[in-house]
Amino acid sequence: MTKSMNKEPYQQAYYPPTPTGITKYMRSNLIWQLIRFVVINLKMLKLMRKSH
Image (cartoon, rainbow, N blue to C red; front, side, top):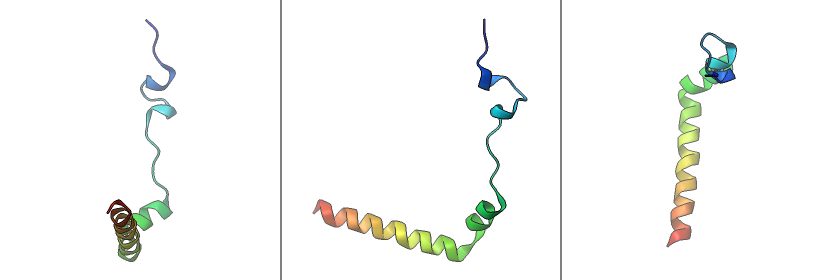
C-alpha cells in the first residue's frame, strides 16, 4: 500500500498556507470590507438586470 506524497503527516505540503500580514489586515479592515461589499452587490445587481 503506497501513500500519496501530499498526504503524509507533518510534511510541508500537508498544512494549508498561512495568510500573510497584508491578508490578515485586509480581512479585518472595515473600510476594505465595506468597499468589497458594495462591489459584490453592484455585480449582483448587474447580473439581475441582465436576467430580466
